[in-house]
Length: 283
Image 1 (tube, rainbow, N blue to C red):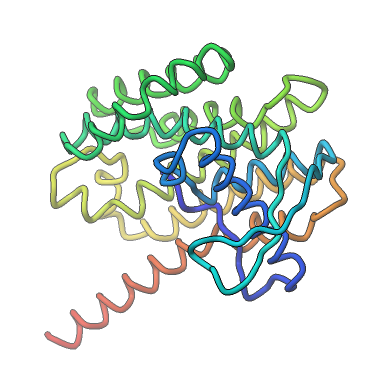
Image 2 (image 1 turned 90 degrees about the horizontal axis):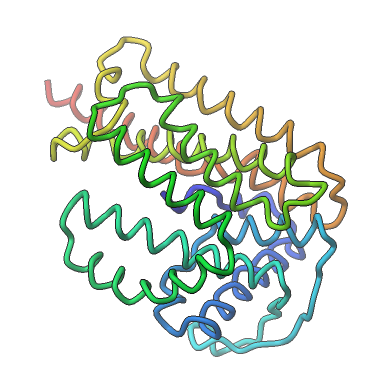
């Protein structure tokens, strides 16, 4: 599920790229400080976006400090520490636990089971601190599993489960901005679910795993249908986002929502086109 809400690096100004990296690395250090080295392995761009969005909305710049990362020892980098990033770290761990559980149930992957066990005690503690978010994730996992086992093919309903869950996670304080943040997360979550199903389609067909797009992939207009759905989801997401009174770092957030989220889609389409060209040449 993770990995779709990224920046379009070539289109970012250098100062904006450094700010984004500062939040990304700040989230990494928050995961390490609160949950140890294994927590860092759960780091992802999606929760970096959530942390940055909340920082901008609540004007929570926090502390900026120089840090020399072991992965980049030749130069210091500026990282950010604040409550929004700390919240992003907590949600990363809570969500990662249930995603690992999903991987274990899908593939019986021993690595996923081992990692899930490492996070279990941390997830239990976080469920007490964030009962609303915890219940949203648990409901999401329960209803998604139920829908998959029944062979549900309604992509809008399935994507809506992810959207509702992410909307609750983005709604940090359940305050005046709750509805707007939930709407941004809802449409972004639907986009993520459909992108994930689209990316995994061929692998799911080969391994005979559930994927709601399998029944539709033979349609002559399948590719256009997928693009139109994804485009609609991000248009709705951007419309809700623009209603938020955000000024600082707005260009970074717009870069992600208007360009970055399409990076994986473009790569998948390019790979498919190359495969089709190779197949045609061999005939």
